Amino acid sequence: MSASVADSWARITTWLRAHAPSTFDSLAPPADERDLAALASDVPTPLPDDLSTWWRLCDGSGLPDGRTELLPPYFEPCSTKHALEKRRYLVGPAPARTADPVDEAGTRSGAFLETFVPIAALGNGDHLFVDLRPGRWHGCVHHWSRDDGSQVTPYWDNVTDMLTDIANALHTGSPALRSYVERARPYGIRTPSYVPAVQDGCLVWRRSN
View 1 (cartoon, rainbow, N blue to C red):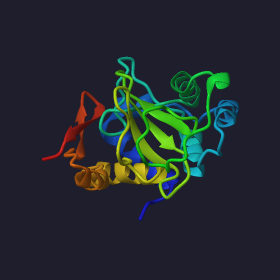
View 2 (view 1 turned 90 degrees about the horizontal axis):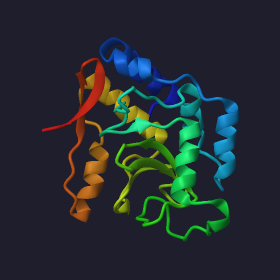
View 3 (view 1 turned 90 degrees about the vertical axis):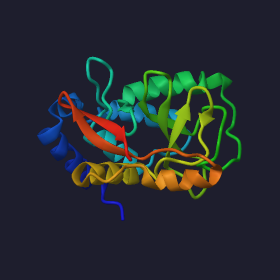
View 4 (view 1 turned 30 degrees about the vertical axis):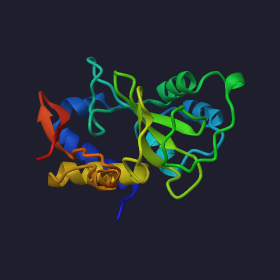
């Protein structure tokens, strides 16, 4: 069962403060409500409560080298401002936007759709995003590949599930992304789960054995 966003975030920050202080120091303060409102107004469907709650606890992160691997395997959380900038770039200008196809949330897409909200990024152009298309996976956290688009199955059910998985991995040493590994297997995808480690005071994620 997933814990609440606030509870999981408290567990994550407690662990970071004790074990990965550089990553802890990189965490931004809560989002400005005006920035959150600007992002919400750009999305054609309401932001999930768990995503808004997380941004109200922490408005992204960032180390000087651009690598805050808070979200496995290597993703740095976006601020609300950066999420809006990245979203507008990936979706395209508003006048050129078209209605999203009827495919359900969690399915593949070769285009970054209006109902996709980026929440974390890699320097290579890949992102994690929340998929707000309708269906059983509405609100799921999905991987966007710069080269291949969204993947065949989501990483996590939602932001709440993501933060619970990360908190559990930090406090128990158990691998994160195990549910994704199981969901991907029927598609012929062999992908690893990840365990936390610390390098120079920073949280990093290593492939589990």
